[in-house]
Amino acid sequence: MNFPIETVRAQFPSLATTDEGQRRIYFDNAAGTQVPQQTIDRIVDFFRRFNSNTGVFNPTSVEVDALYDDTVKAMADFLGTTDPGEVLIGANMTTLTYQLSRSLGHQFAAGDEIIISRMEHEGNVSPWLQMAEDNDLVVKWLEFDRDTWRVEPQLLQSLLSDRTRLMALNYASNLTGGVNDVKALTKMAHEAGVIVYVDAVQFASHRLIDVKDLNCDFLACSPYKFYGPHLGVVYGKRERLESLRAYKLRCASEELPFRFSLGTPAFELIAGLMGTLEYFQWLAGETGVTGERRQQFAGAYAAMGAHEDALSEQLLAGLLAIPGLTMQGASTLTHRVATFSFTHDRHPASHIARQLSDAGLYCHWGDNYAFEVAKALDLDPQEGVLRLGLGHYNTAGEVSEALTLIEGVLAA
Ligand SMILES: Cc1ncc(COP(=O)(O)O)c(C=O)c1O
Image (cartoon, rainbow, N blue to C red; front, side, top):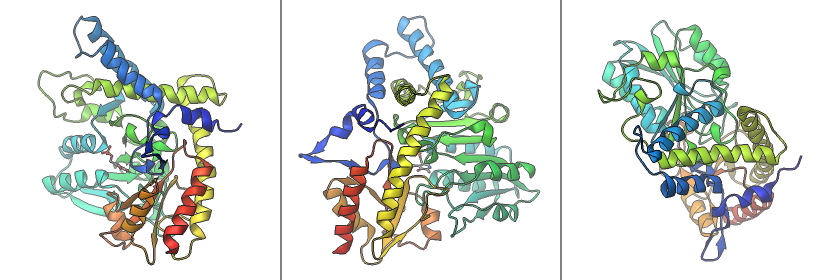
């Protein structure tokens, strides 16, 4: 079935916004996506009808409690767990990862080892480096392969020892777009008794996550990268979360997921997250998929993924044909998401980005906080890469227009 691109685009009011009459081509989705009307409506509805704190008898408060319960249940379906207690909602991925790393640090002894992959965004690096520093742990780096653009199992095997306690692993790189075989790497780590913390922030925008299939211990994602509000979500295996010392107020609940919920949550954004999940259900319906909520999410992601793959093929072919351009990531669609970074032999990334942005082609440049990746690729520390991140509301027409603009800038 054809992807209903015009109906999809009509759900996103910001796609029609112009800059002094100039249309916007949103190819900066890897940094954050636009939101559908369902998300906006939910946020507005929260403030109009039931803005309240939680836990008392006022009808507004009762409704907030129900909203929280509904949203963690829907997010549990989205992530692939049946236990809503395993779903922690917080400010963003970085904050939640810092919080959990403080708790995990208590389970390790001086001289224990942790492994951090070199493919990570800093959100899955700095919290662990500082945890290691605080607890006298040894840090080992897991390199990615420069041909496959992913972590290869044999590299992990060589790092595992009887002192290894934790591995921080990227699902999809926010710079190269490379996707790791998280399931296989997790299995290998578990055989050595290692806890696996997965950063799925980039992956979640493009493919449906299945935490039970991956069998990872923790997995982080950020709704604002998958058409939702600025929040972070972490899945944690119940037994892991229960075993952790929670940094929390003494009088706050010991129940999951609340024992990791610090202070008053951003209820209006949680309402917005519910709207985003409802949008995926709507999209599934538009593509003819019915069934349980999880099946609807799978249907929506299958349709979004197929559409993005077609755009990616078009964009990649066009970029590869440009003289002087080097892809900083795989040149095929195998094991990658629709995040594309490149450098040019004459034009610094910041110059390209400025000209493209002036022409209404939204993009990003620099190391994009993939600090270790940029160092491993020997990129110019000031310039990094020019990054284009596609989303499912982008069109083939936008890709053609983008390629014409990029060719023009790079030909100068
Ligand atoms: C792969 C990856 N991990 C982590 C983060 C940080 O996410 P947050 O902004 O929710 O802390 C980002 C943000 O760009 C990212 O792309």
